[in-house]
Length: 159
Image (tube, rainbow, N blue to C red):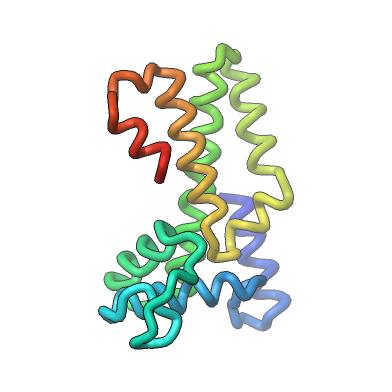
C-alpha cells in the first residue's frame, strides 16, 4: 500500500490533482470497455466491431466493474492496484510452494513490490498486473497438481 500511495501522491503532485494515464494503450482499452458496457460489443467506434483490443479479458473486466462504478479510468487504475497487491501475495505463496523459508519468500515478495517497472504498471490502467497475477496463480495451481482440474486446466492456461 505504501508503494501505491507514493505513486498516487507523485501523480497528484505532478499533475495538480488531474489524474491520467501514461500510455495511449490505457485509453484504447477504456474506449473498448465503454462500448462493451454500453452494449456496442468489441468496437472502438460504435457500430464498427473490430478485434483491436489486445487484452480482451482486461477490457471485459474493466467494462464489467465500470457498470458498477460508472467511471472507467479510475476503475482501471484501482483494478491494476488491487492485482498488484494480489501479485505480492501470490509471489509469497509460490515461493513457499517452491520450498523457500518464510523469510526468503517474504523477501522475494518485497523484491517484486520494489521492482520499478512493475510499480509503474500499478497506475497505468493496463493489464500488466492482472496478467501477472493470472500467471502466478496458474504456477501455484500447477505446483499443487493441476491435474486435479483435468481438462479445465487447459482452458485456464489458454485464457
